[in-house]
Image 1 (cartoon, rainbow, N blue to C red):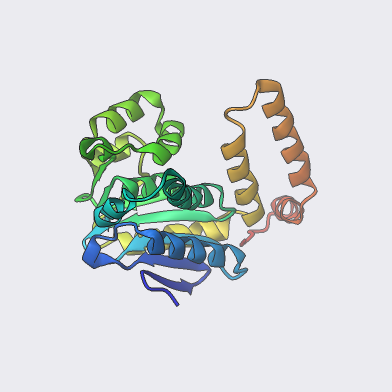
Image 2: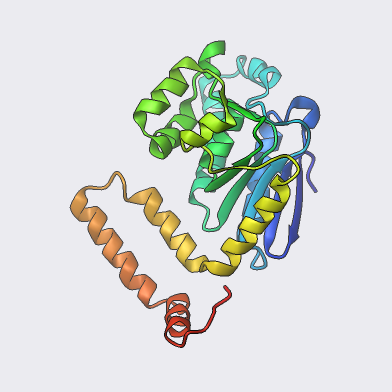
Length: 258
């Protein structure tokens, strides 16, 4: 079904694996297309509650395929805009997805690959992984990821990383809040799966979806509009089945498994 992606599910956790190891899992049109299709499939699968994105090979992703970018230089502006929108739609999809998306980073995440890690809700990395938004070093720009990175870590640190294009260690990426957890290569798969299962069991899927929507929409609203939006979301949540079920379990001192 897929050329560059592997897809599997176990215990409500969907595993989407980048499978272009011979090209360091670099992005071309087909890989991005398959990632979008796999994410859509997981979104609509009622048996899936959380999604893990990982990669085969020694590199999580080297970003854009440079041979592919070289060919794109022959394109018209309209053709390049369509291709840029293709990647934008992938990052936007992950950011707005109503299910949790967790990155499992077992190798370097560079340029667009670092962008992919950035837009996930949570990320685990091995200590050996390096991170960097290196586009400025080849005369390119970290255009799409800049939006998400500034939101995630603030303008000051984002400027430092985006304008220098320097590589940083997993430890520094953790301090900068680009990644959430560091696990050894021997332990990372177990840690990611345990975390996904814990989130699946302890959090409401409806609540996760609504909270992600609020996080994405509220920060740049006017104060009055943002607070009104939050109040409306609050009222909608109270009427939801998950809220009714959760409150009933709490009052009855029952442990709820979502």
